[in-house]
Image (cartoon, rainbow over all chains, first blue to last red; front, top):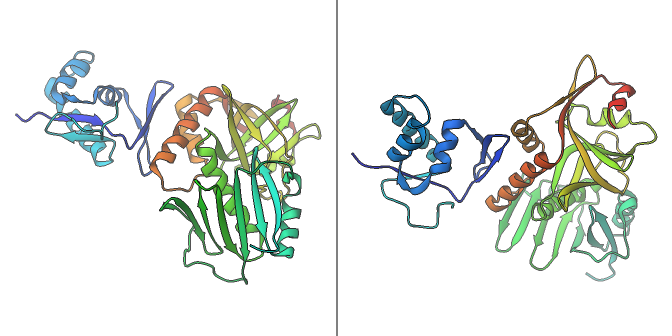
Length: 100
Length: 265
């Protein structure tokens, strides 16, 4: 199975406020992430496979079926990538387009 | 420009030199910004005003603020302005009405403030006992109403657009000439921000704390910022988050009578 890699985009601003992750996209749209989405966002370093993030950060913390958790994570990152918040790739990130 | 008349208008501690050849327009802005003229201030920016006959200046229906080739281009049907940040100067072409330059000033200040962790907020603001209180909300939320109800001991900074700048680890609100329905410029003073209230009408006066994320979302909806610039949008976002992290934020539901000010201390 092809691995997926996710990285935070440089083009957005993100801030944790009162326990909620708020993200403003480049077109000034504001997003608030729920707890699991925040975990995935924080782990989106561009080099850790999404599958590993879900296994370690989601399945290791929440009582969820791994297949369901991975499907939910895939849907989430596809949605966030569609808004330019995350960069979704089949390769580990090497460029400057991802945030630290 | 030859035969120019100049005045320095200082809003929020940011002096802008305005130059025009039109005596009539010079008198008009002299009246409008009377409390904000400061002849001794060193301007951070110089602005030439070219007065043209009334009529459409540009084809832009809506306000457009964009950065192109090192300059900001600001357009609306009734004015065209350009500003070169690196050179610290710009110009505006408009008819001899105060609304065009007022809009240009608001936009200029929003751009200048973005790099200084400051914000222009849709909010009335006032000083009581040396502390500033902000009352934010969309049109009709009660900004002008609460301004009208303020007791004599309260000094009004604005009933429409609040000017907030970072001051060390806190925030300071400044008076502005940007008036709303009250049609009266604020006092040219400043004070540390003690609280930010989001206004709502209701059957009784009530103050409720707002959680930081909700406060941030609400504040972001009430910020004046027009530029399509990703870097500046990020700065504005972080400034808004900072404000709600450092300033107590409440929802103020109020009945439109003077008793509401009993709670503002």
